[in-house]
Length: 561
Image: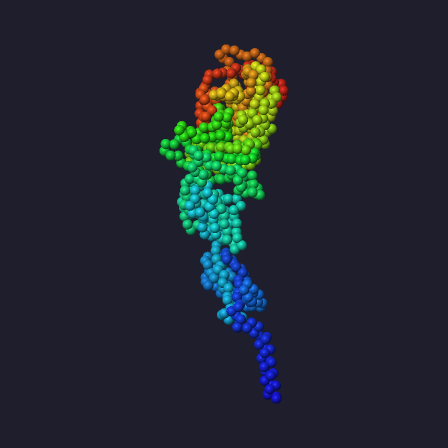
């Protein structure tokens, strides 16, 4: 009996010991697996701690975490990254390493966890895609820290960052998009960011044409109703933006090149069109029109029979040529109020290869606020506004460089009309201001040319002149010759005085620069490129100023003639 009791006591003690120390029977080790919180990317020289968890699988898709498990950590290459038994990992040098965590409580049947960790510099670019691209195309850099790139270049040509494109995923992998800028050539891309200079490992093949080519005799179509590039941001008004377009080199027999864009919309809105080529100022001209076509047999551009144009020395009216002289501009910015549904054409005529940028904005953007008569950038717009009551007097604005204002007025009978114009002092020196005034008869159906009845194109921005005009409708056209935004005051009023007679009666004071006399030939289908117009020899008559706009205040001292 005592022997049996001793055996029973030993058996009980053995059982208790087993329950206290062998919680996880080895026969179930195959149902145990380990997971590691993914790290993926570790910046070289940095350290971090990762965690592991052991799981008991109870059935398909069903597992429960096992507490109080010790893990054994190992690195496949301690020269790249080290790890201790607390899961503390240190990045040593760039490369890829496998970090393994095994549950120490279980035998080899328990499945360990392995995480692939990339040790990288604070900026490493794995690729720039696509590997073949035209100017103006979007290319994206991928890699650790790519979202922190502050400068990217290809063949010493900077790439232009695409707004809001820099992102980083949860693993630390970055990306950023850029426009491919002219005059980049095929080469490896260089990136600077986070104090690191690095390069892409591949060569980007650059096609030395922009993404909208060919667009010289066939326009590239933009739908202004399409999705905007950056909705819900500060850049939401932007409809079109590309800073990396290219005036392609001219062929041997070419004297000029052209890039042509067709802008369509189904609803009316304010629009601003901007085209800049800062590296080649005064070597290109941009024209806006409501109708444009390519005349292949005659190898020229033609406008519609009732169209208008806006551009240097080209302000056609109802399909008829009007080419007032203007100084060459450095860039083009044209703002329109209430552009109706339909189509606008923008065409840039250039003589030298260069990078340029194109922007189309919803809204009216100008150096000076829009005056009460906008939109008045064309005779068609003036027709819609109608004729103001006579006498007409107002303070208006040349809102942007090389802007033009069309003002329609009506005369009920043969009348002597006085025209006065004065530019106010503003943010620019008065010496830079140079406004011109033209008076044109509103054309009738069947007219083959515009009739110029008065012009003052003398240097400066003061006009004081008169003309004897028959009953009918006319346009007073104020043009910014020099390219300086300014406020000005204009007055159009009747006066009572006798006309001068004889061959010396002249209607215009002109500079020695091309004028825009009526053309004898039919110009209802004419070139957009400015051409001299034949002079019909028709001269309007000047009258001495006696009354009209005098003595009403506001107009500063004017010259009389």
